[in-house]
Image 1 (cartoon, rainbow, N blue to C red):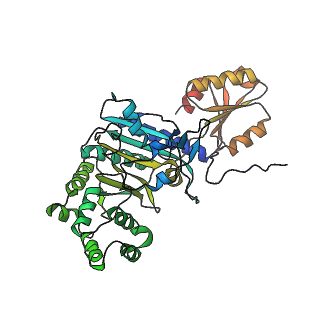
Image 2: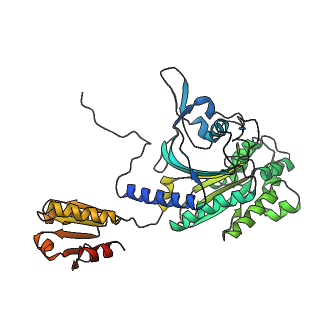
Image 3: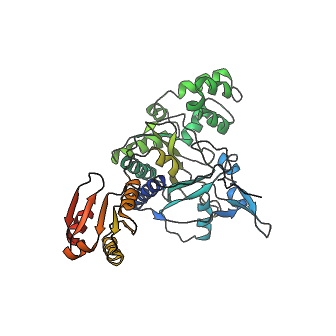
Length: 406
């Protein structure tokens, strides 16, 4: 039986030039994570399935229910990680001497068995930063500022929206609405289904007067809630003030209600101005990390997907800079290539016909070509061809390294 090879739906693969763009963005992300003092960690793809279910959540989160489950040969119930955050509770239980505040970052694959679309996959690369053991709002601001710095370098215009779990809870309590988590989930759908549909859905949990009063309240700005002593309002204002110290601003959005099954304080979402949907989100989750230690450990973090970021980033990709074309002088070609690599100049060697070498260089968008033949070796000068302009120059080895190294 002949097998026709086919990729599994929802599991993307990346070839040049997209793979090069992803790697360039990953390097930039790591640079800013480390500039802000976050340290890398790596965690296993597989965990015991029991660890993935959280007894501190108010109802199972959608991401948890979408986890891939499996058994090993011993019949143990296992699962593939669907995110990184839940693993922190195990890490702190097994490593109680970790110094706090613990600032970690992680970039890696996560899997969720959920419906796929053109920009939604079962396997994707997640980028996380978290600050564990710092209860101050300054930590919330630092996570957001790190991400905004990355977006600025990727030429992505974005807006930061913030809300607070305590504030939203106190607003619902003031209207005497029950089933708070279900109501919060409906409010979070405002951008997707519109106000009328949200109000219609809320009739399952509240009467018409309660819904009308709720929406009037949600039109108020943060100063109203602060003046009327709504819990959580001060945390929102403090986060806005802390972000100003970085030169950034955040908009208060009382309808923002994602992840409220595990968030405990400020929550935030970053949206692209030029495209729809969120590109990053996070918040404070003080009840999760310390659950196996039976104590509260303050924590805050932000998470975003590499695929989404790559699709909207506006950056130039640096290709291999130069191709060295051997004109029957392979030894000398390899020797020169090694010298260029020691100077951190990316290059490749070509030992075929010059015409094919130049055709290959154009296809790969290589900037320069160097010809190495007997004449060049005798003169101790090499012909450097600019593949964009077609200009050719004879340069000494030192001159060539100086020019290519710029």
